[in-house]
Length: 134
Image (cartoon, rainbow, N blue to C red; front, side, top):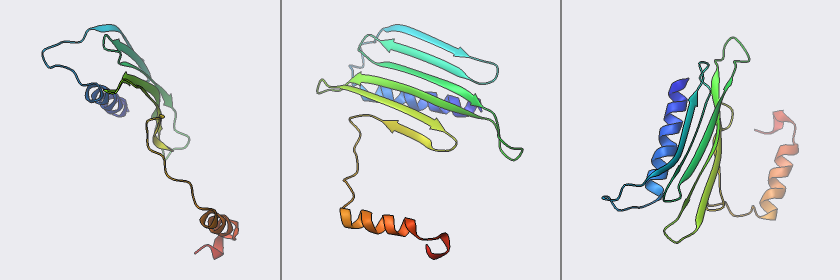
């Protein structure tokens, strides 16, 4: 599933490019860059640019657990940059076949808390036997 890894890498790189506005005529130096791809499809990469963008990701092969499933790459990584307002933005993430893409960062919006009456009703519904949950 190198295609999955390539797509994930492309998305991460595009998000970095979009995240930090810069003058079109001013190239940004790459301070460090490393990349490694193993024959089994696992990989890791990291880079840092002169304008403060940093990213790293590791992809690990997860072998199929049954004959009707296939091997997948589990990805974990992070990217950070400085926003136009001067705040350090850091996004960490994981992506796998069970939970999909799971980003985390202080800058991401969060849902409001569930009102107590609604939470009580949800807890009650979860306590019912499966046949009565319909």
